[in-house]
Image 1 (cartoon, rainbow, N blue to C red):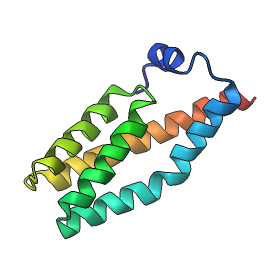
Image 2 (cartoon, helix red, strand yellow; image 1 turned 120 degrees about the vertical axis):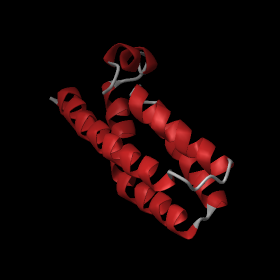
Image 3 (cartoon, helix red, strand yellow; image 1 turned 135 degrees about the vertical axis):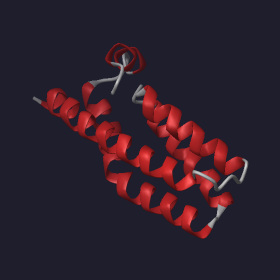
Image 4 (cartoon, rainbow, N blue to C red; image 1 turned 60 degrees about the vertical axis):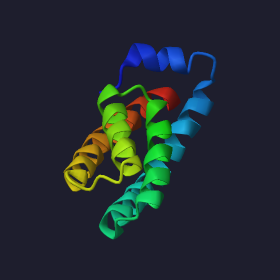
Length: 114
């Protein structure tokens, strides 16, 4: 769940149109990002996973959702450590929580354009 107060602080100086654009970019890249991470895990491509997980962590951090931030941080750490035990479960949890974040962002987006 997004910490709305921190979200407002993070985007305080941006116009609503820019915030909507940032949300749109995240939503449009969502499926590809998670497909890539899933492939990295299946292939045990830890170098690719480090890049993908770090990138996702950076993007998710913008939205001030502590659960997805922490899960993406853990995924990034596991990729760095080339730790495969529990990786699939962590990915599934991160994907599920990120889908919830995406739904919440869609709702917020609708409020910004109305």
